Image (cartoon, rainbow, N blue to C red; front, top):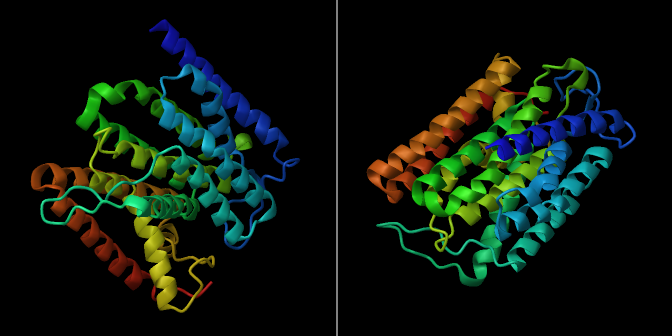
Length: 344
């Protein structure tokens, strides 16, 4: 016990020191977020939160109970981190970002990890993806990578959603396979701790050291979570059902596809920036940023538990149907609320 507490103490200390050191070098690295008409904050803020989280976790990975797949996912995600940091500094083209995200997926796929099927249901057919497994895996992870990035518009939102997703993975995986998965929960736990430390600084408890995740952080967390969901739903691992993986990331996925659909309806480029994300909609309706984050995170938690409740009481088929119906309800509400907004 003393060893684990000692290790945790040094991990926390490493996190804090990295945040301080990176914050002091943020201007040199061009990792500074300058306020503009689309941003809520005042004053320049360092975009180093994601880098601090990643460096903290990877520096302790050797000392954690991990496995081949988790290590492969975390090491491969350095590509996403670097591309995100370059995007924070130089505003990279969206096509280049997508190509790099796909390349990082290819590395993990080359290691043997992919989505094998859409899951097992009583009434829906069982579909083995075969060669299409890579395309489905890549599309899913790239979608979540960018969905987490899209949600990074208010303090604590993207990190909070990432926190809920990882805790959902831990909870559902433990329920379905507690003996095999218990050792690697330590790695997941340290990611959770690192996110919590980031939130302490991000939420302004030390105003002079306020930091943001940056594209490097939100995209890297989305990428890691996407592959962890795929890993933890593999049949040979026999952890959580794939339909429950969807409920772990419901809000980011709803927001991503909701925004794309609303942009298509209005004839806009689906990748163009605007103020039609869920957090923008709520704030434009009069909610302050703090209440907006609380509403969205509570909604994510409710959906996480709702998915589990439907699955354990009514089966996978209704859990999938419930996920789809929840998205339709979300889409209708946000379409109605966003009709009066000015195009940005």
